[in-house]
Length: 347
Image 1 (cartoon, helix red, strand yellow):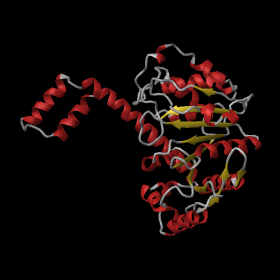
Image 2: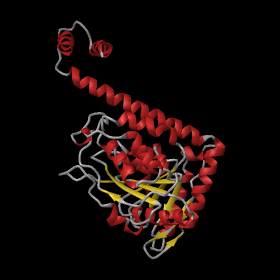
Image 3: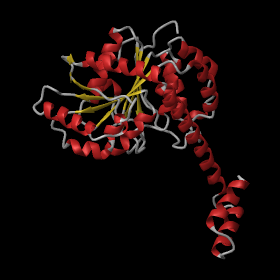
Image 4: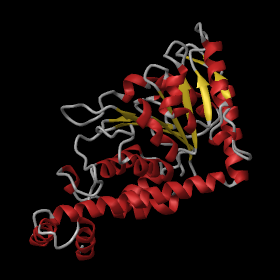
């Protein structure tokens, strides 16, 4: 990539296909995929925006986009930020972007926002929350609507991540909605997952019940200048002592960092970056990084296959073949499992 990505805040498209395969009205316009990929590789923000829009719109060119991007991916460090609403994820993301830019790295940000109940688009604006970086030529910020997806991540997020990776971002930060127990999906997408907590945000045991502590590669106690920060750290250490996957021999034990991330100060962010770098090196030396990326690819393949299958099932809904099999089940001539096998064989 010869030039940095132009910082911009692009409006999220309204239409999208949850299955990831059905084209929307907006995506029927022909797209010059090779030209867009070439533009993105040169740092053209409009090309990056158009490619992500094609992904979100489930364009008929989606397969061509994926094929064109694939040779240029796998280089970006992917960092996920999750935690309950109100812990300061957006502020921390802004502080991390500032720190990475100081280190000379190009940064992409995917901010997965709640969906508008009216348009289906992102409810929060990226310029509103991260306006400090809106004009930075080395930062690309994109809001994506969660579209009601329980995991807090839009279905198109993995493909949008590929676009930013191919466009030359050294680091991609994925900031999620913060919806509690279903937020765990971020761990399957990021190389390093930061779980943010804050004093006074509720009983720490509730966080353990949500299972969110299990996905952490790094705990960040934000707003650490508040009363109760010491107790929050003690709670986290105690819950770590209870066991879990991180307590197994050879596994990474998540460090606990304190930060005070705000527009005026980034206290503790430098320590967070040190721990993130330590985790990156551990991923490389232990082979865990390769395992995680392979598992991520397997999940993505499975999701695409299931989406394709659901589309085909939609084609047979109400068909003569399905009606015949349903009649056989009702008559006791076959059972639902055998009927399902026969239907799949026909597909």
